[in-house]
Amino acid sequence: MRSTDQTGLAIITSLVALLFFDAMGLTIKLLSDRYTAQELSAWRNLFALIPSLLALWLSKMWRDAGRPWRIRQWKLALARGAIVSAAQLMFYMSLGLMAFATASTIAYANALFVTALAVPLLGEKVGWVRWAAVLIGFAGVILIMRPGTDAFSFASLLPLGAAFLYAAVAVTARLFDDDVPTPMVNFYASVTALTATFLITLFWGGFTPVSSLADLGWIIAMGFFGGIAVLLLIVAYRMTEQSNLAPFSYFGIPLAFGLGWVFFGETPWETLFPGAILIVGGGLLIVWRERRLRHSS
Image (cartoon, rainbow, N blue to C red):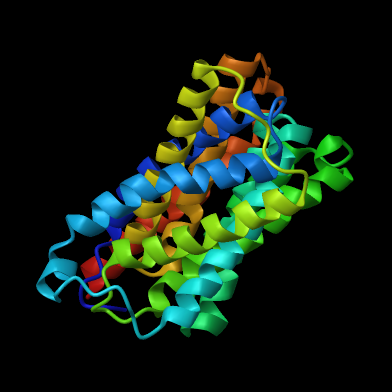
């Protein structure tokens, strides 16, 4: 574990990121009947560059280093951007094919993948308590998904695949050198994802003209929501071990259900419990374990 590990602040940062991710998802759902997933992904990456560049410009670490644009691990940075573009396409497609709450619920299963990938990629040692917390949360996800419903249709593979890819992006954020500013990591991924998604869109039917100023406003907001969310999540994952944050990702599930109910008329309460209790229980178990570890050290 790094000496700069700040688990509490990382948890708060990741929860704020979840709120922005859900705001982005709601916007994508709103626009998905007029624009394709690849178009929305391209526009999201374009406008997300603004908060990415602003954060980089304000980075003291980057300024003190002479504002370099090249990093030693540039290949890793570009690979993460390619993974981001694939994850976006899968998740955005699912939002157009499934209910917002269902797609979001499956996508939030990335916490399990984060913990699993942190072991081989980062060499983290995950104790039985944290494994149990993640599995308890995942059991809650299963209860909410209700096997036999549309959550297990072919479309459900899209957010599940996106969950795995997003987890890979989150885990690899900690592979960068400590002297690489977080905004630079995000900038490389954003530029690569922007290039990839624009090329995919051009070769996959092209762009649909933006039909109104309202749509343009939503598209810009979508980019800002996504850019800020990713930046906050990278910050969180570079502040502590992946497995410490994994169970807290599940808190986005009841939030997604509530937002889907308010904005799209979904009625998630019958499927929210008792799964939500297990999700919260897994997160509280991690909090308890972290406090015990701090008191005993």
